[in-house]
Length: 155
Image (cartoon, rainbow, N blue to C red; front, side, top):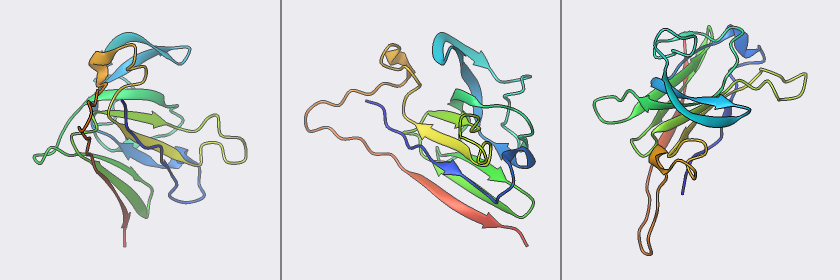
């Protein structure tokens, strides 16, 4: 099984090009025609390295990220921000992958006015790559994971 959630975040009515983002991924899956090729690539030195807060700008995202850097308590943190507010997304070690999407397929006039950061337990296409976090629950077993979304206002 794979578990995740699919939130789109907005900070204001401005396009995401004016926002900044950070998410703690050190690697991402290479895709071809929206299907993973099986190659896992490093973000370091690439335009997809958002381990530190930086502008989204015109960058386009529809990627599955992995090998997340963790806080001391095992959680991972992603942030979206503009000049006066932010959204902080914290998720526990049950979620080892992130899908990040910048909304190019959303119809006008709302194209690129929301940004998705989706913590998930397994990578895209994990059914064909069980090593990418696919979980199997036997009878009477359960799964638990948690995430938190916090708005942050700047004064």
